[in-house]
Length: 84
Ligand SMILES: [Zn+2]
Image (cartoon, rainbow, N blue to C red):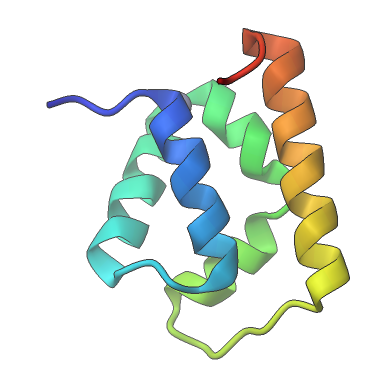
């Protein structure tokens, strides 16, 4: 069952929460390495993602998390249309 970009985007939100399993982190990184859409999408939060995947305890301030999630969703909607 191949995942679509949108699946990765929803996982990226968990990514930001630091709740993603290491295997999933790797999977996402692999996908992002091949997929320009997702690469652009996470570019602004790449640093955060890398921190989480390195297993370092990262806790984003709640406000920043919300802002990142909103920015991500907005860009995604603009590019691919609204998600349900
Ligand atoms: Zn993608």
